[in-house]
Length: 421
Ligand SMILES: Cc1cc2nc3c(=O)[nH]c(=O)nc-3n(C[C@H](O)[C@H](O)[C@H](O)COP(=O)(O)OP(=O)(O)OC[C@H]3O[C@@H](n4cnc5c(N)ncnc54)[C@H](O)[C@@H]3O)c2cc1C
Image 1: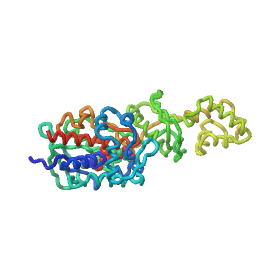
Image 2: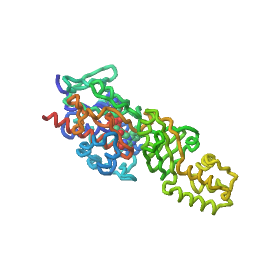
Image 3: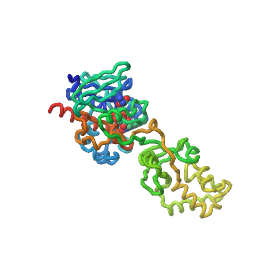
Image 4: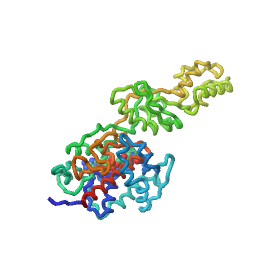
């Protein structure tokens, strides 16, 4: 048996492209195999078409945003981090900017420009790219990965290499090619899979309040997550009502825990505090002041001082306040209900959207069987992992791409190092 390549990379997403570029930069002969017609399809839709490339913050912050075992990423970040990725894009002439929350975007706001820059760098003469090609099996010999079998329509072919990198992504947005193939490939050679579940996913709520508010977005809101009547977390920022429930940055961040709680049949509630800067007392003072100053106005018009107009009718109903009432007819009991509606607007969460609407997959190949210093399998020599296929994920903000780049580069560096020895 003859090695056809130094490295075979399975999957041409963010991790696979980075791996190909790094390996070819080091003079390795690379085969990159992609199931879809072209590489980087998820990257094209990332960041709402703008691609949040990375997050310009310290590794300690990246680790804070990562789950479930942030320390697993320490060496990968140390080896290749955000400045390294920006240097690659810079050398390809990509202009970029840093926005709120240290999120890095291309100046053009076009994810295609980012993918083009990566492709120019990575897909050069040392890299043979096979698209429309699905890897169906890892070939092993004596607990060493020596190649892969792929399927190109009618033809099945086996190719050999000194090392194989599995970078097939998770299960979210399957139309981009990420359909969870990597789990089956890894499982077939002995790896354990932590149940993949959607994360960074919108949630479905009971009742018709959210649908009535569809399209309304709230800024400066705190959403607190309650599981079995215990507060477990909260997030401050922006959110959005939809025809099925809630979404937006703070909801997506909390969704990771929500999905797990629902899977364990726990009671899940989200409470919205639309006045987080005011405690009960201060809010009451403000209500009293507005009601006194507008005593002869209809309460509906006074409600508009406290909330977006779309919320007025539903919240008046919730507080049991008749629209014929004037400001000076609102008593202490009604004020209490208004305070409650503004600071503890409760939604029971009854479900979440499917993988097809989840930004990321939590779960995947169990990292206990992967060496965090090399990204090599502890079970099968010569088999490496990169990106979302592993049980690693992070909050929104460019952190997920950085996981893909950093783990991919560490996998390549370790594989080539091993090849030399
Ligand atoms: C809508 C959306 C927006 C996002 N926006 C951002 C963002 O702005 N910033 C950020 O950091 N993260 C973002 N993410 C997350 C980020 O896109 C992923 O974490 C990242 O793409 C993971 O990279 P990956 O290479 O591991 O996997 P993927 O990008 O999923 O790539 C895997 C590749 O493997 C291929 N493949 C699968 N199976 C096989 C097989 N059997 N044989 C051959 N090829 C195969 C697939 O076709 C695919 O091309 C977003 C995700 C989504 C869904």
